[in-house]
Image (cartoon, rainbow, N blue to C red; front, top):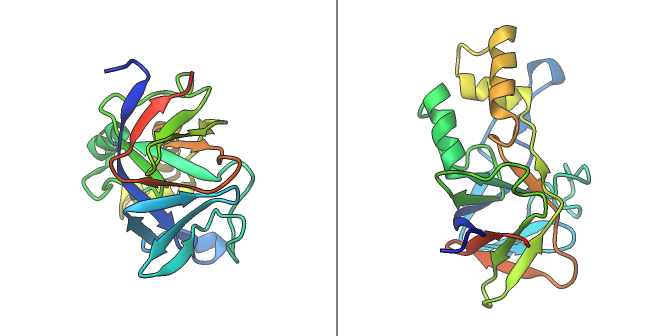
Length: 195
């Protein structure tokens, strides 16, 4: 196996709406809008999926009516090895994909930001490879940190500790979108580091 290979895509998903709900002072994390899909369409505007014949936009897609796109969070990627660490720290309720990343890759030893500096390439359904550059850390939010801590997670010191634990790529990474025509990726696709 090449030293550029990270792993294979084990889950693809879109967020149909924001995962942070409620009034500003009572905002909480609700993973209900996460929808697992077999294929994801990557466009210059963001991720999309076709479900039961309907084209659905991820909430980070620039064309979503309530887009949460901030210019750096187009697409996110997480790793199963990091979920194992998170579960060990917080409990079994933190299931794979619950952080809402677009792409989940099976990797017992996940790459860090330094390894992802040039981005990644993902195998497309037509047998080619699409480059996703501009990797950056997906910093955790307070709401997700509280969710990880569970019902007793409201204490400020514990929230701060959770935020620190989940940061640095443990929560995942953001990647830039490909330029040009839309490409489609599927569960099972190979993922490798860019040269």
